[in-house]
Length: 250
Image 1 (cartoon, rainbow, N blue to C red):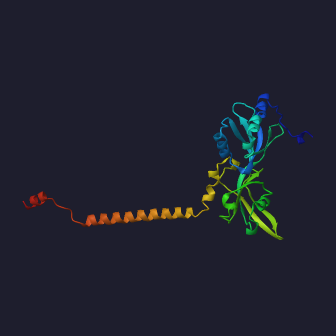
Image 2: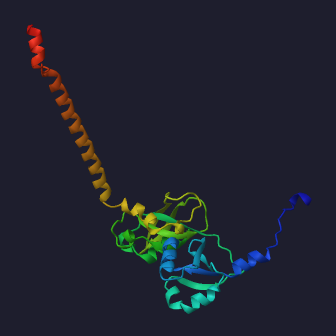
Image 3: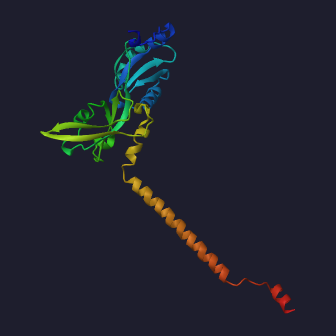
């Protein structure tokens, strides 16, 4: 019997840690807003002491640097904070988050089902949809759909999904983007970072390649001109000064 026992460590939280966490409020970020950008918005409107601490995916802890009661701050400016946070509530010991944000690509989405509700179904088994990038919403690029999800796995997502559309079964491939380190939360990145891959989906990348080709052509042209001039200089007789001619005749 003793061999089957599992050792479970025991820990008693300190009053200091419980007090620190208890002064904060747990909230969910709306519309998948990037945390760094949201922090800048809050600072810009005058809440310089209010900090957003990531808990995982779209969950955050709101605290005041001067230990002021956050619930009072949010209540007094409810019209403002309701635009960014939902269901804010006081932290308690039972609250634990085991999720992180990840950008994934969904391949095989049929055009007649290209909308937000359908994309939610596609990622149902691997996460919770938080946000859809602009190019996917506007159907600028429809080779794949790109969405931000909240997921409980720390493994790289590389899976499939099946959804019935108008009586026909469709298979989809869902692949996580590799722009972040293993286990890193994509919700912690700025919008500029998350849109970096989107820019590569535009024709501008081809212009950039063409421009680099023009530079190579220019360098080759200059090299040819230099070589031609160098050969001409070698073939042309060296000029002889008058003094040298006089000396030769002497």
